[in-house]
Length: 117
Image (cartoon, rainbow, N blue to C red; front, side, top):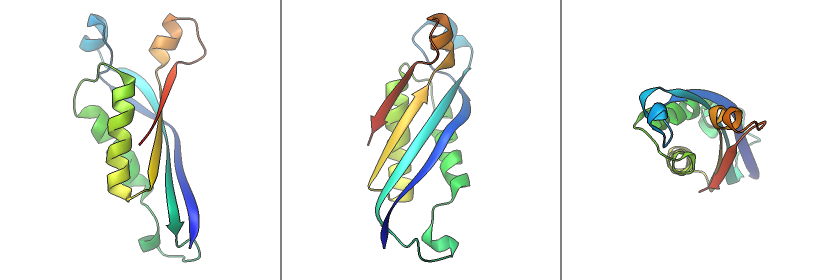
């Protein structure tokens, strides 16, 4: 048994997020990056039963994002991390949400938050 990290980088998600009236009327694109950490994993085994289904992780991220309108990307990151931690039985999950629309408006390369659950 070995420690293991599994990650998804910049999964593109269209969703309803933001505090402004225009953001509440029109979905926007965010990028979700996650790192799931496991204290012990059977990395010496070559069978799916010892791993995590990446398709299920991606689907869960999209399900959390589409469940409702989020005012804050911090709250989206928290709920995403909690859902993934439960789904995969991970020791911890870090979630980074990049919000391109906010970055563009502020002339920044990116604006993001990172939450660990």
